[in-house]
Length: 338
Image (cartoon, rainbow, N blue to C red; front, top):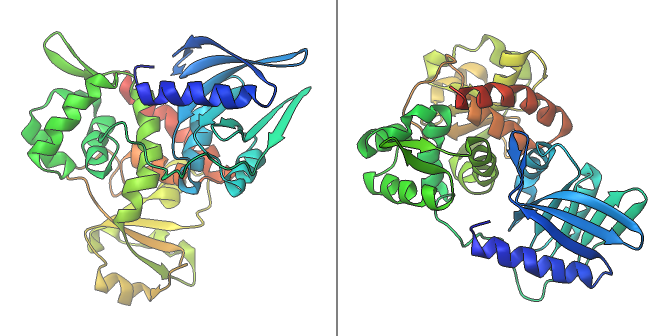
């Protein structure tokens, strides 16, 4: 790992785990595991029991990012371990319920790889955690907007800054500092005098996690109640200027999911839609309208781009959405290989 903050976090978590009586050995940093890359391979020993984990090192785990974390660990294809700064008791329960192994800096842990079983929660951090990742601005809302069109169209990485800014809906200067930081993070390089994305699968996973945590909450314009969720199937989206996202878009693409929430992206709440479809404002409503933040059209007419559909499914995070997200993931990765 080139990131000193994550290296320091890994070392601190190892010390905390050793105080639980665990033997921890870092076997390899950033191993390539098929198509995925972990932050580290870690051998965990307890008595005469030993397990080799593929570890992901992340700060600031929150309920909104559980789906993304679960999905990222699942892609590693072998026993996986979340290494983080602090897991609250409710988050510990949620991770345990999902079968996600974790170690944190405070000494909380869940390892369940029979016959190895460790379960510790409720240990408090030594200092207050704010959940933020201080290492880079790349995954703040402006940076996420710049990265999004590059995930949708990796070949756009070599476009002029002005064109990237237009498609991302950000200022020219924002593109400048994001494209300056991406090479430092190992996500971009100049190859043959052209900019190219590197590790796009890993970039996608980090984008999805940060999107749920930082950008998506800012995009929500309103939530509404509707008597029948099936109304979206006959909705003339073009008439109202919306794109279909999330579960409903995934259902249309895969025929694999019955949506529990209808997600629409557009510039504003369209009064005609509210009147025509008899929507009623409701903070817990199953219809959500979010601001469209990108300025380009994609392949799927009247649907949001695939990486955003995937991100919305992962943000919901329940088993049925994560299963459908896996179906879409393959199509996204295929674009990276073009």
